[in-house]
Figure 1 (tube, one colour):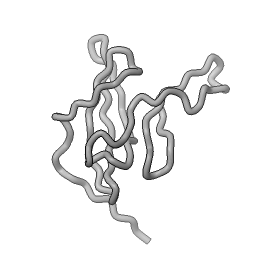
Figure 2: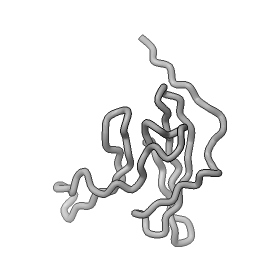
Figure 3: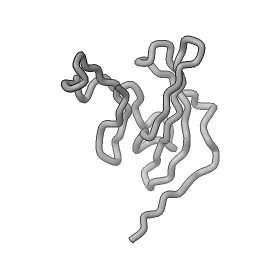
Length: 100
């Protein structure tokens, strides 16, 4: 199971396993870490993973230090070791504003 671990800032994407779906090896293996580029310096979260012709693709949200987010892309042959595609992420910046 893939899941996000950590507070903001500092969220990463992990992979955990279980033999009975009750007891998990939490937090598991960190498979995608924040901070590779400025646009994802604080967190990586909100991800989707698809299997495509024997390999995996992940689309994920990255956030900077002030809450601006962009969508990133990573690929993996085994679902554990991911390589970020630094050329392919959204150039449009989304600003998340909190309301009261």
